[in-house]
Length: 108
Image (cartoon, helix red, strand yellow):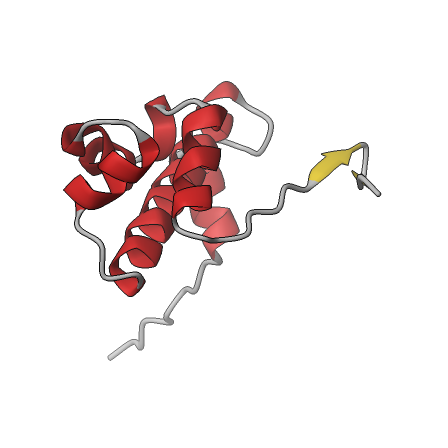
């Protein structure tokens, strides 16, 4: 009897193999979609912590409930203006990091 060795792959190795290497269009699109999904989930969690319905948040922001629902599913189609309005209505701070050639830019 021969024993089979368990092969372990890192998440990065799996993404490289099945999605594409970092810097390729496919990988960049995947990473962008993932960030937008996470942002949508953050909005939903903040709304729920404030005990607001999607309709109530929509009223505060000036959009329809359907737009809040779509935003929570994925912030992909939202404008930065809408995202900022949502976080303002939720009384939540939002911070952006900009990284250019391994240097973070900060506004002071």
